[in-house]
Length: 490
Image 1 (cartoon, one colour):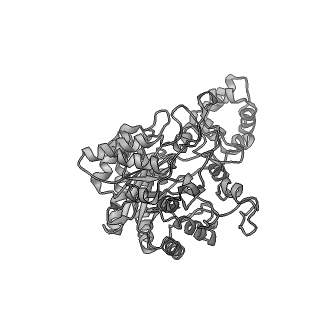
Image 2: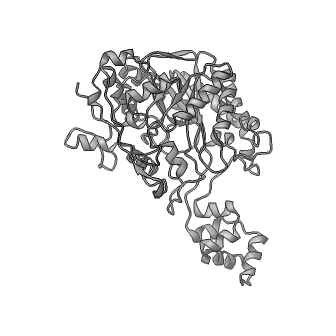
Image 3: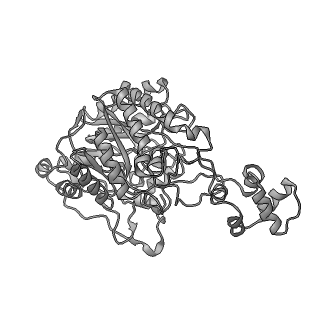
């Protein structure tokens, strides 16, 4: 996400937190490096690397050598849990993103699991995050949109006639639309039509006029269940159901879901499909396979779900038997920045995107541990309801002391770190061994997210800044950046 996602008037540049790294004995005595049970499995530590999409799969969705090297490198840091990137459950083209929508993907995923086991010396539990997403298109050229994509209605014709257009010829009417400025277009088009023109067309779960959207409650549970079964066959310890951010399942949970078929509107109806998906997955994979979810503690958009919705969902999930609850925030299309013509909207460019991955340029709250209160509220609600489902928190956590404070306060059961782990995949091991002063510390400027936004292979600028003279380093496809984190010279 670009560094200017938040209004300039609200931003202050915050320093990276100063810290005193623990000795090996202090780390061993801490909570972060103690075991925790996640349903049928036990993680050796409470350290967690969340799912990150590195854009290294093949265009057909297969595991590549670059994918294997990527996850091997994270495994060398021996996190308690490593979550493999969002992996599509459908057997449809989706670019260089991993897929698990057919049995042909299983051998490559099995190789991935084997590599993680090998490079973590069997210490790391590995989960596959499985996702469904709806259709989205690039922002069209103005003339092209009005020539090809706008469905002309009597309402459009009447609005143009009111503005002096006398012809009834559709070609001429479409040309007249293309000549209007955005102010006038907003007055004529419906909000959805204007969004399709200005941001690009995308589907919503409330589009009940579309048969395939209407049928999602029927089609998604078996798709998720089959994907989870393939993950089990590939040797994963479990799956993380992707119920967060801008994607299908999160959209069912959102207050913006206005479906009228029993799967939208009130909270109980909105949570219905996520529970049915989980039930189908559990029935397919059994109780000896870990099944949890990542979902939002707050959508951080106008009219979206809040922590009150999230605590309700969390209790429902815990009651249903989810093995863990991983909490995120924001990351929605609803407030994303307008893309350039020919590009697609990206859900981490607006205010909700900043809340998901806050940078050092933030408001007075700062970016570090900013989202912990959401996990804390959810954990309290789950425990008050009589459940002990582990809760994972994330968001700007980059020191041992931060993680220990979260665990000591009972705000979460595991503490995750994405960007700091990207900057230095060895940092968990360095801290455990009392060598924290060797940690390569993330700057939280979201250089990595800027690459993700452009669908480029994700890297960290620190890899090149600190190791620019390494002639043996493999480069990205454009030859400009180091492809993998440098090895730790112990």
